Length: 329
Image (cartoon, rainbow, N blue to C red; front, top):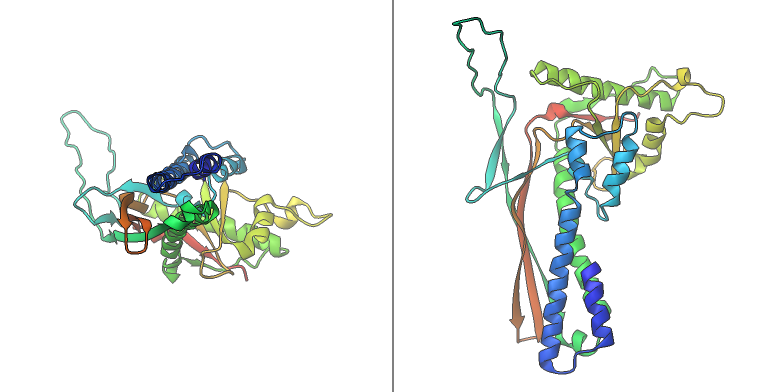
């Protein structure tokens, strides 16, 4: 709340006195709220998220370096952005299609005078739908006149929190809606719980790569995967990713993680006993139709300045084979 804090500090040193000054002060607070929301939206789409989705710039064997950069930009639970590719939905569309498979393009050696093999889009598609959301905020004249600025700042924080919470709920719910065909059983052949978790994570990544290969998609062995875990499993997953064994254990005891994994912890998953290994981006998409937009007004009935913010976005998963829902028992 950088801009809101600046406005409140200015009001504290030079409080508004006339009704006109009170009105301008309320408007200034609204503008500050809008500026802070814009900063939040910008921070959640930094290069770190793009790197997670594309694999470019990832230091070999050190996914924590990218995760630290990613998390340094987020205050709210925006870890879902590491999984979903951000796209823009232009007017007048309120939905978009995601193909379940590609076009089947294959490069063949071309002999002199030979014909180019033509491909066309085949297979099914899923339709992702945009939904519209809105919320309002009131600032009482009495709050400004009586210099109760903490109420205004608290309302502004709650306003932004609600928008970020909504987007998290919608995107994590899309992951939870992935069908049971993507369930992966816990690997029980390891020497202990840690070894079993390591083997399960390796198996999830391997299956995703193999499933993509069957669809004609080349996914490299160095492809970074995103592991989305409920907060209840965070310590256990951290142990598996860090391969932290008990005293006296060696690598042969708990196995070796074979893939680059970037962990994201959240409280929004429905099942606290399962986590997801995800191939980020590609056919997992988050579409924005309208950025969060503000409209202001005056309510003379209860002497308030009002602002309504509204935006539109949607989420779709065109290829469930990009996900593995992993059991822990």
